[in-house]
Length: 175
Image (cartoon, rainbow, N blue to C red; front, side, top):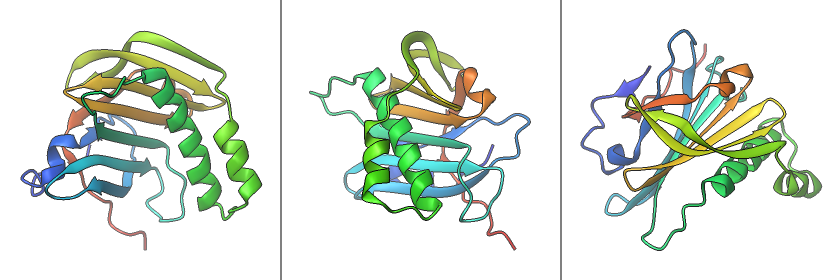
């Protein structure tokens, strides 16, 4: 687990989550903050086994502030996260075709279900939705006024993702 203690006072720290990675040597490849310092709206982090900038992530953690009138449809968030992962992978691999992005946007998951343990947040199981598409699993839930989504590639996505509050810290650049 890699989280920053220096950023705890930053406006985005209250929105950020870091995955708990017991035996997996994943590195934080990217941290994206949305909103402004006066009104932070979200944090996205991408994690991968290879710390290189061109590597595809194995795990993505995204949190966003829920508006008071937001229906917080967890299944829709999970499906949208799968589609976003596909588009990010396409762009990372150099395919910027309009047709490719259109296919990603129309992709349908193999299954979507409400579950009692979509995520484990700071040790507590949180209900939400799980969507699966091929070897990708997206888990979406609402927690502390945030919409939280974790997308995982590979068989590890079958287990509820574990996250803790905290700002991710970028891995040092690959040499």
